[in-house]
Amino acid sequence: MVKICCIGAGYVGGPTMAVIALKCPNVQVTVVDIAEPRINAWNSGTLPIYEPGLDDVVKQCRGKNLFFSTEVEKHVAEADIIFVSVNTPTKTQGLGAGKAADLTYWESAARMIADVSKSDKIVVEKSTVPVKTAEAIERILTHNKKGINFTILSNPEFLAEGTAIQDLFNPDRVLIGGRETPEGQKAINALRDVYANWVPKERILCTNLWSAELSKLAANAFLAQRISSVNAMSALCESTGADVTQVSHSIGTDSRIGPKFLNASVGFGGSCFQKDILNLVYICECNGLPEVANYWKQVVKVNDYQKSRFVNRVVSSMFNTVSSKKIAILGFAFKKDTGDTRETPAIDVCKGLLGDKARLSIFDPQVTEDQILKDLSMKKFDKDHPSHLQPASPTSIKQVSIVGDAYEAIKDSHGICILTEWDEFKKLDYQKVFDSMQKPAFVFDGRNIVDADKLRKIGFIVYCIGKPLDPWLKDMPAVA
Ligand code: UDX
Ligand code: UDX
Ligand code: ADP
Image (cartoon, rainbow, N blue to C red):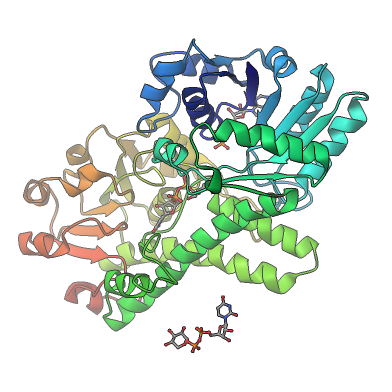
C-alpha cells in the first residue's frame, strides 16, 4: 500500500488529501499539522474549514484510509510520498519584505523531513512557492542526509475555495513538474499513477520543475489580471454610461477571450492572487526585469484602486460623510461558499469606512465574530513602504458590531454594502429591508447581485459596480 503524508492541514492540504483518499482506496493518506486544534477539528464533527461537499468526502474515508494527526515526524518517516502544503505568506520584514514569499515554514518542514527520513522519499511541493524553490529544498534535503534519495516534484494545486471538491473531482488539469533525470521521471510516474485513479490521462500534464512552479504563479497572475482589467473597465463604464455586464458579455463571446472570470467586483481577495503576483513581481525584479515587474504590479494597484473607489462612492453618495451613520456590511468572506477572509476586500472597505467614522454592523453567514474583529484590528501592511505599518485604530473597533442575521445588520442603517455574493443576499425581502432603514436608503452592491431596477422601484438609491449611475449618484461630487 502506497503511503502518502501531507504536511499542512489547511485549505489546500485538507480537501486535496481527502479527495485522494476517496479516489484511491489503495493509498493510505495521513494529513499532519503542528496546530493541534486544527487536527482535532479535522477529527471532529465540525471541520476547521467550510467547503461544500467536504464533510461527505471526509466522512467516507476518515479512519479507513484517511487520517489526521499531530505526530508529524512519525508519519513523515513512514511515507513514500510527502506533500508539503504549509503556508507561504508574503514576507513582512527584511529582504524582499512586502513581495517575496516567506519560506520559513517550508524550510523547517524540509529540515524535519531530512532529519526523520530513513528511506527514499518523493517530496511534492503543493503550496505555491517561488520559482526555483525546489532547488533550495533539494539542497536542504541532500546536504542534511547522506545515503537517502529525495526526489522533488512540483504539483501545484489549482482548486478554488468554495468549489474545492468539484475542482478536485474534475480538474481542468493536474500539473506535475520534475527533474528530467531517470529518478525524476520515475517519481513523476509514481505521482501520475495516484491521480490516474480518477483524472483522465490527457489532463495530467508533465513538465520540468521550473515550468510547473512558474505555471502556478502565471495562472494566478492571469486570472487576477482579468479581474483587474474588467474592474478598470467598470470605472470607465460608470463615467460613460456603458454597462460593464454588457461589456463583459460582449467581449466574453470572443472565443479567444472566453466568458469566465469577467465579473466586475469590489475587488479580488483570497490567499493567492495578491501574494502570488507580489511574488512574481519580486522574482522579476531579482532577475533584472523591472518592466515586467511593473506590468504585473499594476494588477494589484488596480485592485487597491477598486476598493478605495468603492469606499469613496459610499461616502460621497451619503452627503460626503458617514460619520456616526450605521452602515450594514453584508458579507465579509473573500467570496461566497467559504469562511475564509484572507485578503478579503471587506477588510479594506470596512477600514476605509471606519476611517470616516462610520458605525458598521457586519453579517457573514460563515465568518466568526472573532475572525472579523481580528482582521479589522490588524495593522495594514504597506506594500510600497514595507517598513511602515499603518497605526492600528483601537477606537474604531468600538464602532463595529457583528450580528447573526442580515435583517438585524440592516435595521436602522443608512446604507447597505454588499461585499460577498452569498446567495441569501439575493433573496432578502427588500421591501422589508427598505422599511427598516433610515431614508434616503442606499444599497452599494459590490458584487452586482441585486435586481437594481426592482430596488429602485421600492425607493432605494442603488449603486452597482460599472453600471449606469442613478441620477442621485451622478450629481454627487466626482469620485477619485
Ligand atoms: C484562486 C484560483 O482560482 C485557484 O485556481 C488557485 O488555486 C487559488 O486562487 P480562490 O482564491 O480560492 O482561487 O478563488 P477565486 O474563485 O479564484 O476568486 C478569487 C477572488 O476573485 C475572489 O475574491 C472573487 O470574488 C474574485 N473574482 C473572481 C471576481 O471579482 N470576479 C470574477 O469574475 C472572479
Ligand atoms: C485584431 C483582432 O484580432 C480583431 O478581432 C480586430 O477586429 C482587429 O484587430 P488583427 O490585428 O488583424 O486583428 O490580427 P490578430 O490575429 O489579432 O493579431 C494581432 C497581432 O498580435 C499580430 O501582430 C499577431 O502576430 C500578434 N499575436 C497574436 C501574437 O503575438 N500572439 C498571439 O498569440 C496572437
Ligand atoms: P493553505 O491555504 O495554503 O492550505 P493554510 O494556512 O490553510 O494554507 O494551511 C497551512 C497549514 O500548515 C497550517 O495549518 C499550519 O499549521 C501548517 N504548518 C505550517 N508549518 C508546518 C510544519 N512545519 N509542520 C506541520 N504543519 C505546518
